[in-house]
Length: 102
Image (cartoon, rainbow, N blue to C red; front, side):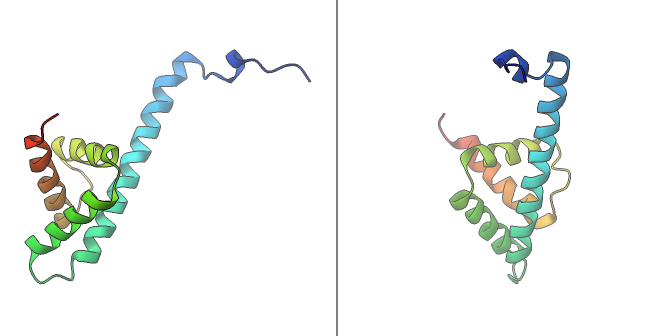
């Protein structure tokens, strides 16, 4: 068996953008699933605004800032795949991030 070099471990350049694109799509799919699951938990609230606020609070408290930024960016491009309550919750996060100092 020959030696493995660092160059051998790097993906081919043509595949790099495809692989990173696939990981990004997989990441947003996972975030959508989690956001919708959390929203489904809060859906038992009689008031939809309270359900959205509860979902947004959960995302604020338990999600990494990078996860929140990614789901907000997805929401800003149409939010495909977000359920009604999750969409309202992410809209709340988007409003907050628009006024936060950078």
